[in-house]
Amino acid sequence: MATISLCMIVKNEEAVLAQCLDSIADLMDEIIIVDTGSTDRTRQIAAEYTPKVFDYKWTSDFSAARNFSFSKATMEYIYTADADEILDAENRERFTRLKNFLLPEIEIVQMKYVTETEFDTVLNAHMEYRPKLFRRLRTFTWVDPVHETVRLTPVVFDSDIEILHRPQTLHSKRDFSIFIKIFEHDGTFSPKIRSMYARELLKTGDKRDFADAKHIFRSILEHDFSDDARKEASCVLARVYRLEDNRDEFFKLTMKDMLTTPCSEICYELGTYFLSRRDYNEAVLWFYNASCETESILDIHTSGDLPLLGLVECYEFLIEEEKAKLSPDTALISQYEMQLDKYRAASRDWKIPGGLL
Image: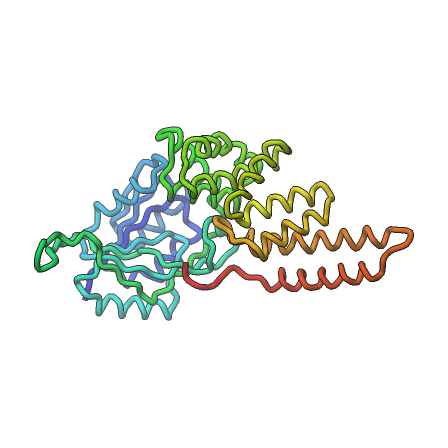
């Protein structure tokens, strides 16, 4: 049977920490909890489950805190958990089976991460695989019978365990401040961090958040010539310019994007722009393209429920406008009403994809 150290970093998690630990504590051989500055009862709750509670000065660096927690582990494997995760009865059984039969050559175990609340900031699916269990010490092995080399790729196992993620609130403001600090320090982002920042902005950012991000994504657009970087920066800046009502920059950016493969994010921004100008027929065109003709690259909602709701709003206004005329076109009203019913049903039935990313 494999031995496992649970390593957690926490801050002000008194509302959820006990629920998390109740669901996993007895599956662990060691529990290590690193507190990064709680001002509530988090530390006291943690001490009820383990004597290994450590203080760590927060430096806006999750990796540093995670590395500190890992440095305290002594078992064969390390399991990482956040305080807003739980394992239900079925998945506790799956975890027990995994622990009993885990092959020693497996170095990373991925588990299905299921976000159950509306407080999702980055996921584009109901469920995705995430690495959660790690072999603490790795054994390097020579491979190939000739021209031998050391195997560098870890042995990864995709398990059937589902971790239920139940966040209580959004953490976007905290994340945005960290993204900005990274850029101020490094002057650039890794592709992963760039995508995560852009995705979180589009999903949860407000007008101030986009204003704070403007200079960053302008710099990315001007200096990073990779296709992904330019597309992602364009999506963010289109929202920035629309919120600023900077029409010249908005249309220069969105029209340039149309020269490449259009994405749902840009089409949705155009639809929202024309809706705000009460140009409902033009808005319909772009909302339809967002929903039916293009794919999202950052936020799945821009090819799903958001443009569908935009279409509903447009057809409601078009019906009102036609009915207000001295000689309304009843055939046109009927056509609008059919479209309205269609998109109402589609928006009501749309759900974030349930499959694995």
